[in-house]
Length: 355
Image 1 (tube, rainbow, N blue to C red):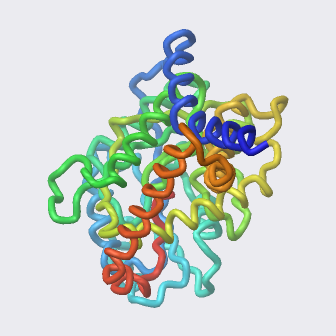
Image 2: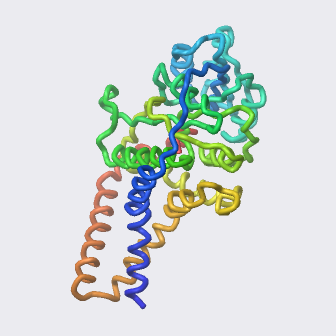
Image 3: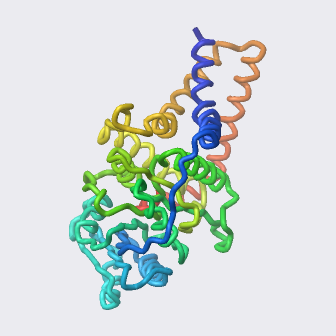
């Protein structure tokens, strides 16, 4: 019995992180589904939901106003969610520059702030962005060129992680930077087949008519909105030329709250959108199960892999057990080594940023 559990657990972990990407590579080659890009210049509303972003918001507004897109076709909406750090005062002068500012005196969360902003948006296309990241001047043009294809309902930009001490670098070399490049690679292959499973919260665009109000308290709005669009019969694609830049977390503990938030958000998503698990209603159900649900199962598979291996301590199984033990000991040592950094960042508020 222990051998059965061992091999099933090992197969789950292997499939989610190695087997599924290989299948995508083959699928993409055998059945590509290219996007019919073209010149397209609709009225665009950039929606930025923010709470306590005093340090970032003015820089973000300047960034949006400098984008390579006609000013008479670009609307900027800042939806403030009861800020307490002076963000409201910082954005007020920009109203004279045509920036639309919405203010909620009650903290209701990012989902409510987004829904409130879209309700007053005039654009045919809504571009969602976060306050922290800067976007490339050509980002909006790159996004909307995909919407020239009527089958496309949403377009995800690319989040480029840069090093804290080297803002000119195009990608971080830390483990997180490597993982994020791996994740983008998977999303790009998924979108070449049909649809990416979610979007980059820092920058993505949707057709205005496809938006549906987000349930308040929804954590992963950048998965909920694109998946609602997929369920409505449209595609969600990845556009690597639409870039947003963010600094990689200073330390593993700085990234840990975001990982917990994403994990909790995936469970919440399953409860809010059960149709995502339906082969009849979700055209990308295989990708959703492999990409999203598989990630939820992996932690349990790893636990079962280790526990079952403890009853198999001969030959190959002994080597596997020693390798797993060494891996977890190294992880624990690394965690302890950055304990000081954890204490420094423990009381920082969790931003509304990427997921």
